[in-house]
Image (cartoon, rainbow, N blue to C red; front, side, top):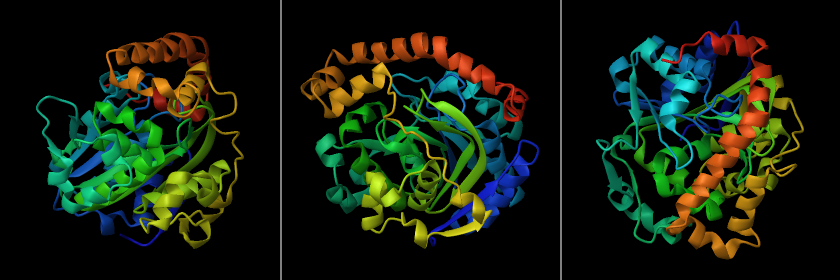
Length: 373
């Protein structure tokens, strides 16, 4: 793995694409990503509506593509990829968040990992003896699980945003792998989510030729993410070959102490999978930007009714219902309840208004300039 170096740049809507190209150069993308193998751009779609800070931005995706093509990477070997969940449609999300238009403009591949023609391989065939060393995945999936075959011996670039999260306090590069390596049963791992993310990082470092992350903080989300947040314009973008380090720097920006406050970063750091010690991470680019502290209130302040119910099921007084609500015939009712709350109640009454307000900002105007397809 490359040294623990994180690039950070202050950006603007007028310069963001050029800034992403410079960002990737500063972070050493060419040193980490082998041009001889396919490169997956793992998009984050946390909602099938546009909501600021929730999902990969179109300029984030386009900036990364322009950087790779400008450095001679084969267009035929680049592809965007996304996966669905039981409550979020990637098909709708790639249009609502303007990803599909960027993909089509640049002529790269677009892969939906859950398609029937996509081949998935059993984890033991993919990683061998490493499967015996997982912290929690063998407990969660006693019969094992499958990962996308196309990921083996390829590069991956994670494309998260800067935001808080009701399960992991904050979310970033490490959490973004959750939506690519695991299939629709991945919600089974929420009870042990922090150590699941560490296991998934070990899988990434085993199966991929190169691992890289590019994070967008033009909008940053505070509150009960990854959906029901308060968006803030923060004008920063980050990149690193160390997923632990980039997540640690993002956590620091939001006001957290990574080694104290974020369990998955602490465990990954202790296992030598990356660096979460802010004093030992090399910052390149606009170093003063990494010293910003936004003092977010965090995901546990004014949680939504849905997030309080999830916490009660995974870790609280409703824990006894965990198996029944997520692993039996009752599971679809849990999914429908989540969809009803988030899509028909919260977004309709609160989220749509907040999203509309951001359309009046310079970033909102840039977003409107991107086509859906």
